[in-house]
Length: 381
Image 1 (tube, rainbow, N blue to C red):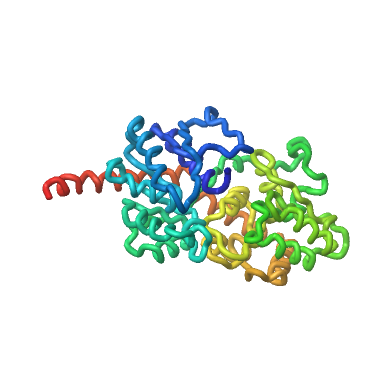
Image 2: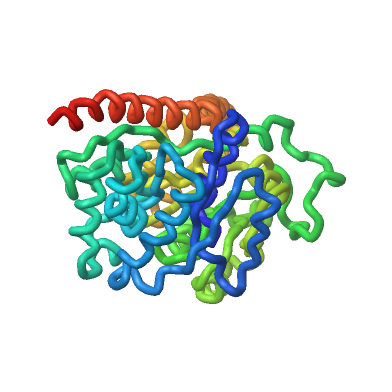
């Protein structure tokens, strides 16, 4: 699996390695369809068996963590989920004698979510939060969910970051730099970009309805580019056909690397029409790094990142009409687009991975210092 959480772990591991810290990532073995070449990474990866279940046999996986610690006696254990990873760390904490830091990326602690409703998951999550030396919140959404679970958790806010380097060069506005195989209908400055998983929660069906309502009647060359893959691909394609907008909608598929950067830099605007929740969607910060404003829904997570009237537009969720209005305004207001884009870029500069990694390292050091001060007192007692 490669998603937002995995990208965050990779980015932090690279930053820590660049600063001379020794990093080991303990990760599940790769799925059969995914080929992982860990040797190409600048840090060490140790694989353990995939979790058979997040309901049963969780404690059995302690042996992977303890074995690693015997070989590599780490000072800090940073678990990127409250359950099951944070719970495993909490279960082994006394034997590890390491600082335990836990980060939730939202999905594992969302109130009413399938993962927290599994038998035993809530109590294990509470155990992890109580025993953690520090709990990292990446947004107001995650902080609220963490405090609902365990009010006594020692929460520190550190947002996710963004890799600025791919966006430091000017947009690829010439034909030679265009990614090979990209649909010729997608032209610089003439398309709105959705980038993400094709899942009902992401609201792409709402975007298609809004696009049908906002698009000019004449053939103006404006396109909606949908980049990503998922189980909704066929249903969304059929919906676009039924709405009569398929000629102006392009399903790009999953993109990465230079193709992803080109699409972000050359879009007129990005759009994230999620209908329920977001923790800290990296695509928003990547669009900001490219100097592009975003249209998003007024939901938890997106309200933390997109400032209405400054870095883009916030519209009511589940409202094709409101989204259509924002799309129409985006096409005609060139001056606002320039201002929004400049503000978006400044926001991204505040979230570069070097500064975000430095905040993590400072947290690790503070936690270790507190442990060293409390250890003599504990021994005396």
